[in-house]
Amino acid sequence: MSGNLRITAGPYNFVAKQEEAAPNTCAAFLGQLPFRNKIIHVRWSGEAVWVPLGDAKITSEYENHTTYPSRGDILLYPGGISETEILIAYGATSFASKMGSLAGNHFLTIVEGLENLAALGHMVLWEGAQDILFEAI
Image (cartoon, rainbow, N blue to C red; front, side):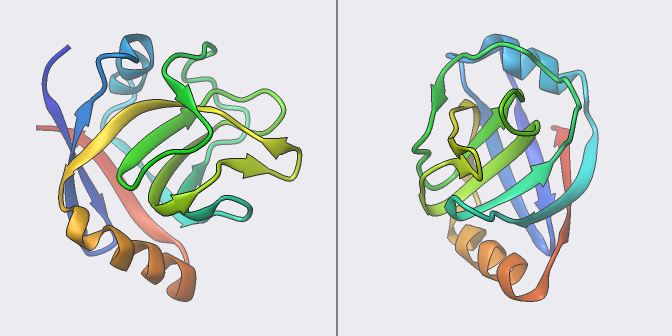
């Protein structure tokens, strides 16, 4: 597994590296590139934004999963008790839904642009949904 992804979210640019501990999730997500959607602020999880994906099935397995992502961690929740989603933590986060705690696959980590991540989170919180684009570089 090699290569990084460029993420453009609202007016901000980030670079994320793929996590070697989640090779199947990375491969499944790479098959979706370029990936365009909207991010909204999380409802239950704290300081994070998310992409709700409904019944989409990008992967069905758990690998390198966590409930407590760090700032810059990007998770893919494969669905189950809640809808499929991508979560991007910008601060203190305890991944959850109205059904309770969730664990998502930590498959990407932001390695460039972290200084703008909280500003993006606050923008989404106070100004609403923002465009997001994931693409290979």
